[in-house]
Amino acid sequence: MIKEVQSWLRSARSVAVLTGAGMSAESGVPTFRGENGLWRNYRPEDLATPEAFERDPKLVWEWYDWRRGLIAACQPHEGHRALVLLEERTLQFLLITQNVDGLHERAGSRQVRRLHGSIWILRCTRCGDEHEDLTARLADIPPHCACGGMLRPGVVWFGETLPEDAWRDAQLAAQQAEVFLVVGTSAVVQPAASLALIASNASSKVVEVNPDATPLSSFVAASLRGPAGQVLSEIIS
Ligand code: OAD
Image (cartoon, protein in one colour):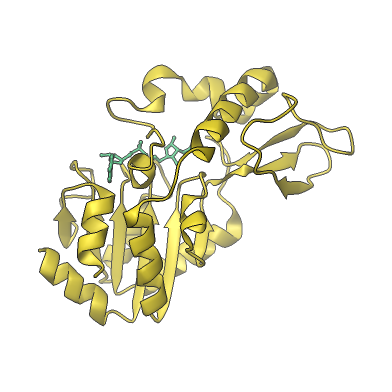
């Protein structure tokens, strides 16, 4: 199947990629579900909802600050770099990610749409101003804006809608892609997971890269069972 997918990717004029936490696993960023997943040890309703932030902003910020420190020490891997190469040689390309870690951008990917925001962006809950802050650990928790309002992480929490522009571009790319790669996502969080269905309904060849089976595995054109770094380097060469 590797050879076949290689040739699909070589001849496609339009490719879209959806990545999830498994994409960053080999860089050392924990995934959410699975054996050592974050949601094994933490409850999303305590840490990743607007209600949780309203109830206890310090607790939520401590968790995000810990994750920022952890991610800052991680580096993109060969799979991230393979996706940069794929972008460079493909006429029409979009990388859609559910990841908030910024590793794709650090690897050099340019056409990236972040469906769940960025852990490096801080947004004011009062004036709405947002800025990027790449310091690994924040000096004050919770951090505050120049206007005096409290800052929140620039991520999408459960119960919040996705950034409109990113979602529109992602849907369009899924409709137009000749090949749609789905890498390292459990495909259980909507609406992100529905992009694979949109692509499949539009006759795109959907290719899944994941060591484990997911709800998508039964209908994709190819299911490549293995870690993202190794499989992406093999199919993009
Ligand atoms: P999950 O943690 O749900 O799924 C990670 C997937 O990566 C699983 O299917 C694993 O089998 C796979 N995986 C693990 N190691 C891998 C590797 N080395 N290479 C490839 N795949 C590997 O993460 P997501 O699907 O990204 O949302 O989760 C979606 C959303 O749920 C996240 O964006 C986050 C989370 O709650 C919010 O916080 C809003």
